[in-house]
Each structure stands twice: as C-alpha cells, then as structure tokens.
Length: 465
Image 1: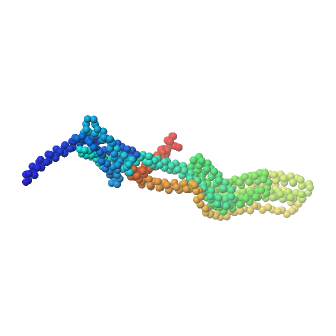
Image 2: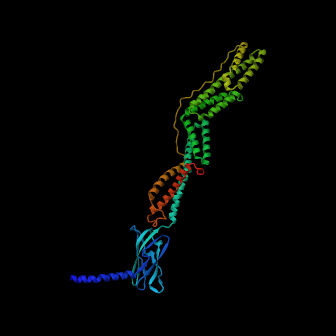
Image 3: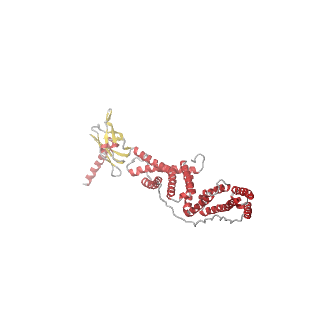
C-alpha cells in the first residue's frame, strides 16, 4: 500500500509541474502591475497587452471595488471600464485592451490597492493595481494663496497698521481725557501745547514715521501727566498770573516796562508745560511780581506828585511839572532790571518829594507793594482712563487675538505635512493636507519678513527701507 502511494506521487508531481508551467507560459500581460496617479478631475487610461495560447474571445473587465489603504475609502468598480478590444492582425492569441479609470467618480482622495481581473473564454487574468487619487489643484492653490495672503496681511499690519493703531489709541485716550477735564481751558498753555503735539503726530502718521510719532505722543502724554498730577497748584499759579496781568493793565501798555513785563509773563506761561512742577512756575512768577512791585511804587509816587503840582506856587509849578513828566517817561522807558537796580530814579523821586514837601507840606499816601500769592501744596488727582478710540482699538485687539489663534491652529493642524505636489494622495486627509498648505503660505511670508529684517539690520547699502 505504501509503495502504491509513492508511485502515484511520483507520477502526479511531474504532471502538475508540467501543467502549471504550461499555464504560466501560456498567459502574458504587460505591464504586470498598474500604478496610476491623478486628481479627481481627470480620467486616466492605460493599455494592457495580453497574450494567451488560445484565441482571445469574449474578453471583459470584471469591475471589482478597490479598497483604500485606510480601510474606509473605496475606489468604486463602476469607475473602471474597458475600452474597445484592439486585436493584433494575424495573431488572435494577442490583443491590446484599454482600461479607463474615471477618477471623477471617486468620492474620496487616497491610495487604493487591489486587483484588476480580466476574463475571457479560455481563462482569467489578474493585474495588481495601485491607484493614488488627490484633490483637484484649484482648492489647494486657493488655500495656499489664502495662507500667503494672510501672512502678507499680518506682516503689513505688524509693520504699519499696528504701530499706527497703537498711536491712534493713545491719541484717542488723550483727547477724551482732555475733553473731560473742565479745568483745562484755564491752563491754555498746557492745552495749546498738547494740541500742537497731536497735530504733529498726525503729520508724522501721514508720513508713516511711526517712531517719530511715538516720541511725540510720549511727550504729549508726559505734559498731560504733569498737568494732572499738579492740577490744583497749576491752577493757583495761573490765577495768580491773571492778577499780575490785571495789575499791568492799569498802566500804559505802550510803556517799555509794561510791554517787557507782558512779554516776559507770557513767555513764562508758555513755558509752563516744560517745567517739572508748579513750584518752578511759582518762582518765575514771584520774580515777575517783584519787578512789578519795584515799578508800581514809582508810578504811584509820580501820580501823587502830579496831583500835588497844582497846589504849588505858580513860579514852581511849571518847572517841577516838567521834571515829573520827564521822570515818568524815564520810568516807563526803563527795563525791569533797570527799575530794580537803578537808584537814580529813586533818588530823583526822593528829591522831588522833599521839594514838594517843603513847598506844600501834605500827608503822603504810601503805596504798598503788590502782595505775593504763595502757591498751595501740590495736590495730586487721578485722571479718567476711558477707552474711546473704537476703530483703532478694535483693529488692534482683533490683530492680537487673531495672531495667537492663527499661530496655534495652523501649526497644530499642519505639523510636518507634505505639500500638494509631493503628496500623490492629497486630500485623503483634508485637515492635514489643507492646513499644511495654509501654514506653509503663512510661514513663508513670516520667514520672508524675518529674513528681510535681519538683512536690513546689516546696514548694507540699498537694503534698508
């Protein structure tokens, strides 16, 4: 029995090998494997060369679904269709079969691996197929352009819009505080100086000189802070300066002394915003008051003498009146330092007083000096910081939050993804692929901007803006 089995095995094995070899040699298909790539807007056609040991008849392509490598997506069999058989003249055992792969019918992008089966009257053929399908180029290009445009917009806003909006917000805040301050109109020097700064800021913004505009708004805010911190003291000093002006208005405005004092007083008031504190303004006003107090007694004495002239003897009246008028003109023509230091006028007045006293003893009304006003202790008060620059404020806040969101979302979504050209299955993972393109576009512009700034920092000719 055992010998019989061995004999049968020795006969079957060569027969099987002969049959297998005959079958293998009888069927030929080229190419042996199909690998096709394309986007979902194309139709791909491949030709298969078939050779068998019997005439090829009733050839058909069996449209099986081709499964995706992700185990979920499918390349439908209905998207695979054979073309018209192209027999080779005089060789019925050989033929060319065109096979059409319609990528438009594929619902999802991705990689699909399976077998293409062809059946004919004498047997079957199997051709391994790998299909790589990606999305149409339009939306990836649109996403890439959107990312690049977003990067450019952020770059432009960062270099131009953000500095402008930050300055506009500060200008808006400062203007609102000025409008809410009822006492500012009493301090015209501070108001006019800040307004002048704000006009200068506007001009610098028009010229896109952000750094200069920032320095100017810094100066304007410093003056405003100085005013707010010493408001009560400043007001006391300005009220005191008004009293000094009123006193000067009592005398001839064309007189050299009065003109000089008005100029000096106005110059001091105009320079008030540059002073560190109201104490310095008080010192300057006190010096003005002392000069006025040197002038007022002289004028009052001359006025008193002029009142007494008519009471003098006729032979003395005219000469003394001429002397008093000349002395009055000398007083008006004197400068403040001369009034304080020149003793000649005082001596002349003393002589006239004695002369008139001898001729008509009368009671003299001595003129008291102008009382000085000491400024009160510096009082500090808080200002109102309402956010009113709506337009610029909204843009700036939107930029800040959008910058964080874009950076986090794009970088997290993109990772280390491949781009459209290199990825033959683009679109099989939309979040990964599309975010990769958008992040690349955004990062490309950010990188360009960073490199440009580094190169510009080298100071090479022609590279600085």
